[in-house]
Image 1 (cartoon, rainbow, N blue to C red):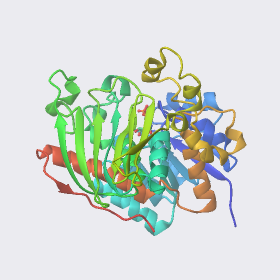
Image 2: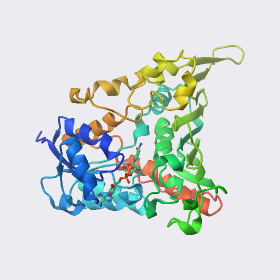
Image 3: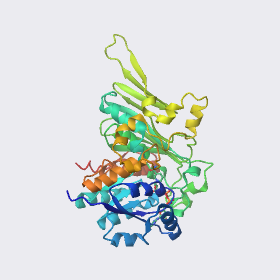
Image 4: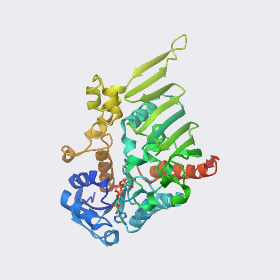
Length: 401
Ligand SMILES: NC(=O)c1ccc[n+]([C@@H]2O[C@H](COP(=O)([O-])OP(=O)(O)OC[C@H]3O[C@@H](n4cnc5c(N)ncnc54)[C@H](O)[C@@H]3O)[C@@H](O)[C@H]2O)c1
């Protein structure tokens, strides 16, 4: 196999990319890392902090034949343009979430990946969240039976989320950024969305960013709540809230019910209930799977008197692994051992997935088709909410197989 080490260029040196530059730099499949930002001081800070070279502009990246991959960490509403331009310039793409902000852009990315065979990965951290991994595993093992109903959410108050600093980000509809919630529940039950019906909440005490006339999105919803009909016959409720969400965890599956069993979660407790079909009278078997799903350090501290409060304040949910993640930990390069991770220990999995996908020329699990299945339902749901919650069909671009 004619595999070569890869040269990558970060587009965007903001708040999030700093967690990823050291990982890309350390990975054994990386030859060189460039950084680029519209604001030269930001690129300079990154260059000095991480010992990487600056490249002046996105256009220079696109024209530079030495660069194999674009690593997109720009603001969330411009991903469509950045990614399509990168693919058209023959670059593989790692992109922070979401995939894009229109259905047409999502389709164009899928089509470009299909036509070119280039690698695209959407870096959805929640795909590797322990609760999502646990539900995927339990569903595959048949513990839930047929999926009937489940709920997932991403709660992040606008005052803490940090966006809204530039005009285009103000008042953005919450479901423009749906992939934390959708990736968890949809991947757990191995399906995709066929139809959505969505309602929103217009907060009377809101920041004026969510006044319809004061943002470019014509949006007044700080929170959006959507029911999704899935192709497997089940229904998911997904909530994206920017008007509440003070504590942690902020992204999680709160419940998942099937014909044979269910999963429920709160604070730090993960509960599996299975129907006992062998018992003469109706009976269930309840298993507390918290120690398997929670990060090792969280479990080590579970007897502390203020444990639940500390969980609600975000402790043990950044750099820590869980037992359910063990298989994924084992495949990481040793060069990552001493480096920081993030978002429930997920950053390293995403970087490794992408570089291995490009190196071995095989689409990753979080490929363009999966990214579309996690992004498009949110975009269609925004339209449903605008029209008073009418059910709308969601286009599906397949699974790429
Ligand atoms: N858990 C997660 O998956 C997660 C968490 C946080 C952020 N994100 C995503 O990460 C991305 C970045 O978020 P952030 O908070 O770092 O944003 P940010 O606003 O801090 O940084 C974005 C940077 O991109 C730069 N930029 C924009 N267009 C550019 C161009 N054409 N060329 C060069 N630079 C350009 C901007 O100048 C800015 O510095 C967002 O898309 C967000 O959705 C994902």
